[in-house]
Length: 201
Length: 201
DNA sequence: TCGTCGCTCATAACACTGTTATAGGAGACG
DNA sequence: CGTCTCCTATAACAGTGTTATGAGCGACGA
Image 1 (cartoon, rainbow over the protein chains, first blue to last red):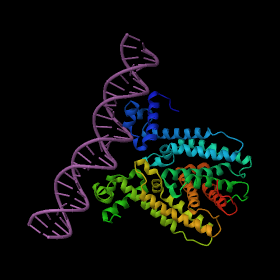
Image 2: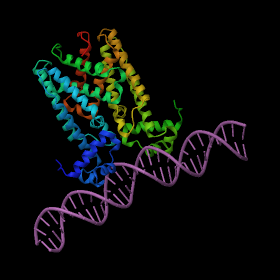
Image 3: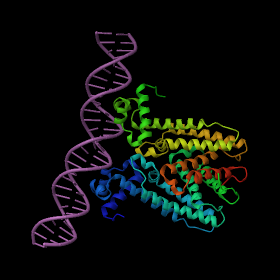
Image 4: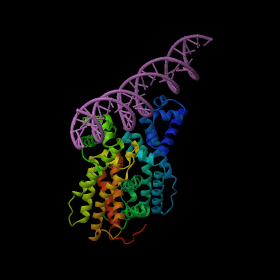
């Protein structure tokens, strides 16, 4: 855990702001140093290089997504909880499209690669979805099954829709949210509900 | 439609090879010119710049994905056709991870943005999935509904799983293919099948 | 109090990137 | 043969990440 100096925070804050406002191409050492009121060397003394700084921004992005989803209040209607969790997840991704894109593999373009640290933070955020899924199972809204597997299926579908929406491919229908996102999750939940009985394939 | 000179093809071929073997960071004008046996100017006379060249590579990536999926032979078991289509789609993505990543928004990192051309090619590939979906509906395997919407739901889920697999996040379970991909598609198909009767939400 | 050590930052340089201007060469056509 | 056009090689410019070098400055002990 790195200590929190002023320059460190200024750099991270500037990086997050630039990435959010102007996209990844605006993330350069000179630009970052200028915005933070220092020189390019600060990036190397505090982070060791540009990739490490981006990794911290990515980790922070996961943490923010974590908080955003955790802020969703839970009720006794677990299925409604699940849709509101999905809504919060999608809203956060659409509000921070560049950060979200960098989180999931896009960063591998700049030569950066997803490290174990961010993978861990991402898995922590995933744990929330596992909890919601498990609660839905004990409440009887979803069939008993491996909560991690079921949560992973929901996550895959949600993440896929969000990625297509960010790429502009949701234009395949007129009203993507009403024709793609919610029906997809609804059908998936129905397939995962107690009405069926077979688990595999 | 640009004419096909030798240098053009050599550049495109080198670009596709470098992107596939060493990733996007290997795509530079000097490197490209050296591999194609010419100078950097060829990139500008034939394409107008690096982004336009990448756009053509992306369009070619969609075309290859199109062919790969189109090569799946159709039987009278439409649901089995659908799983084989999904398998071919996933296999192609895993065999060309960098190209696939650049196709869907990752290219926005380098400053490139998805153009209408590639969006069109991508939508053409999507049309195949719409056809399979429509056939499944007339065969009675899927409930009658808007084929584009249903295909979009299947595509979202499949694309999301593939993206998570490429990012390494499928490690949330032990056997992702057997615990995530196929159960997810199976549950989604079940939710889309005739057994249910409500269409919205 | 004086040195010295360690950490941080500014400057400059190196090799690299995309891009552009310029000049040279090869082929087509009158 | 002249000219015109298209393509390309060279060189330059501004930008990138990174590294080496020194200068400053606070903390520590003699």
